[in-house]
Image 1 (cartoon, rainbow, N blue to C red):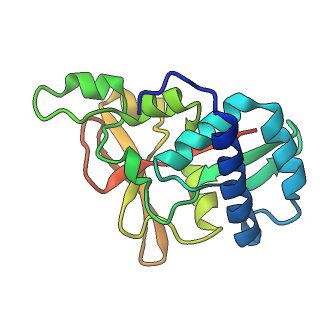
Image 2: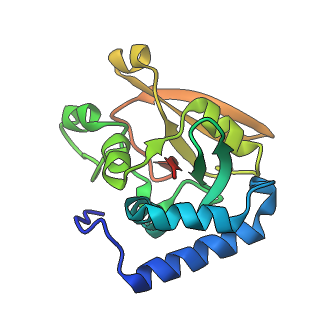
Amino acid sequence: MKNNKKKLSSEENTALLNTLKTRFEKNKDRHKGIAWAEVEAKLNAGPEKLWSLHIMEETGGEPDVVGYDKKTGEYIFYDCSPESPKGRRSVCYDREALEARKENKPADNAVDMATEMGIELLSEEEYRALQQLGTFDTKTSSWVKTPAAIRKLGGAVFCDYRYGTVFLYHNGAESYYAARGFRGALRV
């Protein structure tokens, strides 16, 4: 995923905006009362945010608007792919966990990837809010922001959706699985 460019060409910009607009219009229940023209104006004013959305899209996240923060005036995007984004799976939780592995290291870690993409890992609360907008991670799971006290003890937390319920689990932060990735949030 290493992409130092962080700026889209006009063709990439147009293609991304078309993809986002189509998804926005197809999933109106995720963002009631929000107009695409307002979102697009914000996106065009922040090219670095478009780059982050492009990387979210490129890694399989299918980002979409899920809310508007009246205090900050920001639109909120989450990864809305049915399963944890394919291009972000098989990663441990953070750099410390990656460095702690002596054998069979994963290629990357969720926290560094999110930082490089310019996004934040979803918190448990954000993950639960996402599940109110649809059904996600019925076959996969997603790392979520881990409380410092848990991380200090070597653990990390992840969520998934099974049996009509959102579950929060724990694992060693250095663990990684083909079906576990992470979902991100971006404020524009």
